[in-house]
Image 1: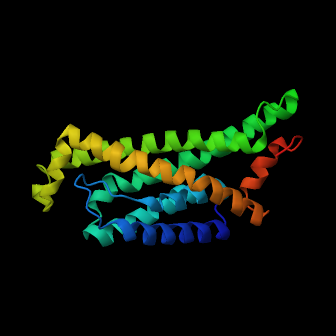
Image 2 (image 1 turned 90 degrees about the horizontal axis):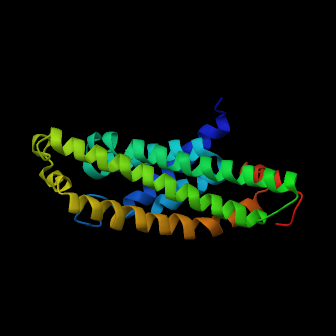
Length: 218
């Protein structure tokens, strides 16, 4: 059941992500994929408030940003929106689940192999890698299918979409412009942001996950 608080958080996440995405949306990359350091926003929301908040907020934010940028929802419907939903939902889900399981194991076995902070940071690392891998796979398949169906984008007035039929361009776009820079930003900027915010606001849901290993040092 989604509460009114969840709806408000989703709206805030979506609005911030949309605004942040548009700041860099017009920077040319030559491979369709946008440079988007704003990914740290839904990443932080997904971890602090839950996977549904980050995933849905990201989907809404990228949907609106794409319509503003391209004037049509067709690109984001087949790629960006489902990709962002899956990416940030998985990122939050895996961070929560792995942190919680590791904490319970460490407490029950009395063998804290990793301290609480190390556990959630490693869990967040796994969440980032899996989330972005799934997200960019969806984008690659979606744009490739759209390019094929629309004869390289000609039938929808987007002839530049034909670039996506070149696998070299696709790989460069997915990895060099998409996966790598977004992972670097959301992980290395996300970790300190999550730490600062979780300490500043003790009632944040993620703190309950961290307490699953409350019997040991932080």
